[in-house]
Image 1: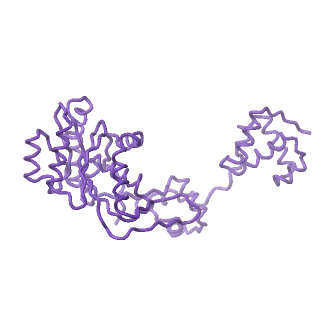
Image 2: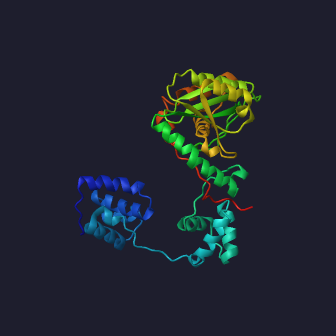
Image 3: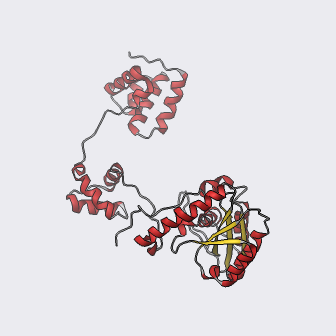
Length: 351
């Protein structure tokens, strides 16, 4: 009878891999050798693993030859897919026209090749050639015009990056400024659950407005909030709060081109306080670091969460922002790196 000598460490690995290895064939190998290591008779292993005497003998010899690593090898290559000869045509089509579902991809592949395959086979083929199911992103339409892309890139390289370099060196303090308008409603997100889950939607549409400024380096957050509108007076209030921090180096605010941020009142207030206002190019939200903070707030305390009354809704947002740079600092730091999206090489969905 074929014998194996399993050390305790191998037995533990066999026990783990028979349940957790991603390939079912390897799981079966591990199961057979594990049972063998526990003294189970061969005839019982045949029955429990549903394998033949020849197969078990092969598994044992593999283990004798190279241990667990040898068992992980899969010799069966399978039959080459008929779709392989059409890989280039399929790749070229999907680069321009991504499919919205496996079913849609199956229909397209059938038109291109004349070959009909099951959804499972189509999914495996698409994974094999490098296709992935990724969430579609969106940008303002005009931001992808060649002239606009060039303008944004020039601004990023010649204005924004030098400012941030000065901030890193302690020569200036740079704040990114923007307003977020949180409506008291249901924010639907994704949940790992056994059945589809529903959340209540609050009645009414009251709005909690947050005008924020975030320090590009320290990630300190300054806010002005209300339940009406963000306007020029709100910006002036924020400027006053920032000026009261007692900073000893020049202060620069990076803002978008909202009218209430570029008016005479705001410019005069900034000049009086010695704060420089630096406006982003039009249609370039990707350059405003604070946009990521608003996304962070929605993920942390709004998506898939129900707040029965407006007071609880406001409190959750305020607490999240107030503790973002302390209790959630690790998450915030990884999100608010000084790397900015460039649209010079992006794939845009065909019309």
